Amino acid sequence: MPYELHYWPMIQGRGEFVRLALEEAGVDYIDVARRDDDDGGIEPMLDRLADPQNPRPPFAPPFLRDGAIVIGQSAAILLYLGPRLDLVGASEPDRIWTHQLQLTIADAVDEAHDTHHPLGVGLYYADQKPEALRRAEGFRAERIPKFLGYFERVLTANGGEHLVGSTLSYADLSLFQLVAGLLYAFPKASAAALRDTPHVARLHEAVAQRPRIAAYLASDRRIPFNEDGIFRRYPELDG
Amino acid sequence: MPYELHYWPMIQGRGEFVRLALEEAGVDYIDVARRDDDDGGIEPMLDRLADPQNPRPPFAPPFLRDGAIVIGQSAAILLYLGPRLDLVGASEPDRIWTHQLQLTIADAVDEAHDTHHPLGVGLYYADQKPEALRRAEGFRAERIPKFLGYFERVLTANGGEHLVGSTLSYADLSLFQLVAGLLYAFPKASAAALRDTPHVARLHEAVAQRPRIAAYLASDRRIPFNEDGIFRRYPELDG
Image (cartoon, rainbow over all chains, first blue to last red; front, side, top):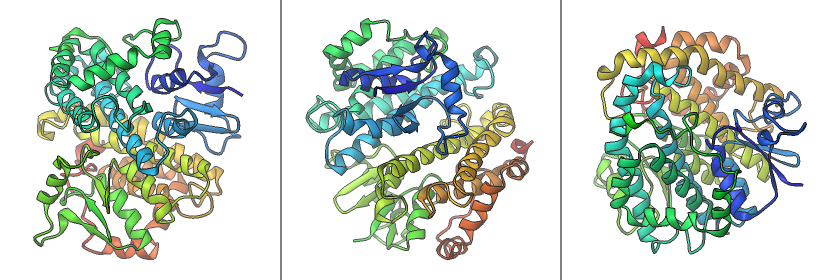
């Protein structure tokens, strides 16, 4: 039975970290809300989210269904998929460390999101633009260099090519996605930060060239970045 | 060798989720930055954070040292400690589900923090007060009820007493802490939300009455809530 991913069909968002893992592994999966037949669309996703029969409901998309088990929270989904897709080491220290990196990537993603929604998700960007300008300033000046500098330190200590061990892990895929998103949303600030973090820049390029990832990125399964997602190109926020 | 917790000594913060697990388990641990001898204080914590010999450094406090292993990210620390402290079920589905709940609690904690720092951590509260007022409005009206309502649904489906299975897990301890923090920071809004989520309210009371937790809360090991932490009592933000 293929994995069933449930996520908003119009954005990469947090679902993309799961998609990249499934794509790199080359496994069969259904992107439920993007199907255009009777079994697909947003409605089955929302029905499953609210399913009163499920005693372990996810809080929000993305969530993954694998037979009888339903898992929400992108980091928890990757914790579950990692060993199954051979995208994490076998030892407990490797698994915890990979997960720790994933959680730090998720923190960076949250902060990137908050640059355009500092006052919360209940208001439009247009209603919080002055606040967004102030929040983005600190994100560009302090946070992008701090996060990328941290991953540079980790890569350097590990030989430069992978975050964990000597093979690809889901954390590498997620770091690729973080960098891709930052380059989309903050092209000037991110390019500047990447000049100081050459291993991070190279990992981003190397992941993009992996055969299955390259095929995925060129396909229509990869939703283009857009201004409904987490990473939004509002030039005024790039300084 | 006792566990060594590293976290800012003046606030509960994200370290508190780890402290509660260690206290409930009754294990020996050292709260490194709170020691006042030569081996304690903030300096050894910052030294270990920046340790060039550690190829797997944490990004930020809290982090836990257990012999040769160092783990950052509070949710990852609990993932590691859960089985060791008997605060999570033995099956993989139970462990993933408990972790998923922890990550959702962490999301709520992040949003509580952002009510007083909507423009980022680089500015003081006094410099972002009008923005904080706007952000807190949505948090009180929409987010507190949504998060507590979700945990009420989970508790109800599981018999009312625990979030997972029939025994205490680290997610129960963390939900206690979330509720305690919300009641401190937003006493009016939280009391109103808890009237609609009676199982959540009872879990908060039941955890506070567990012998080891009650002893901990009454001790000076429990740092009082204060206006440097995540949960801050700024009456203007409670509506």
